[in-house]
Image (cartoon, rainbow, N blue to C red; front, top):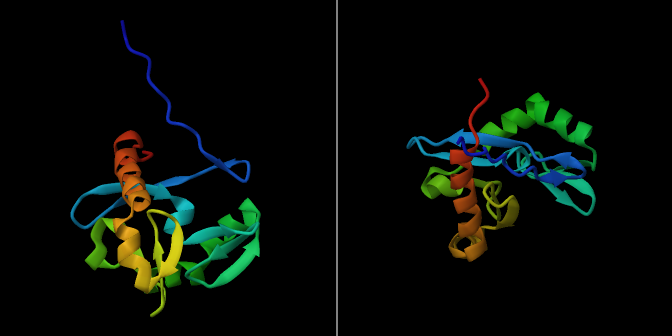
Length: 140
């Protein structure tokens, strides 16, 4: 008998599926995070906020998708790379006072970063990102 294959859970946000990205780190490890987290886009009070561009736009999936394709947005992502010091924790330094955790999809003060990284919630999200790498395979 062949065992049934389990389909991954489909998570939804704003009534649409959450899209994930497989990231390969320099050390070869793989993590899977949401596309919104990778692009530093947060949902704050029924608006989308891009933390790297410091812009706010309508809570609409089409606006969000268009924003991710903007050349200025892509350039800002390269201006704020994930800091190598924090390896798989995927931290972007947005300015002297603010960081963005791609694993958790949260913006936080630089002063509270180490507390965030040692918190159980961050550690659990990091485990999920690692485990998703075994579940999700790249499209061919």
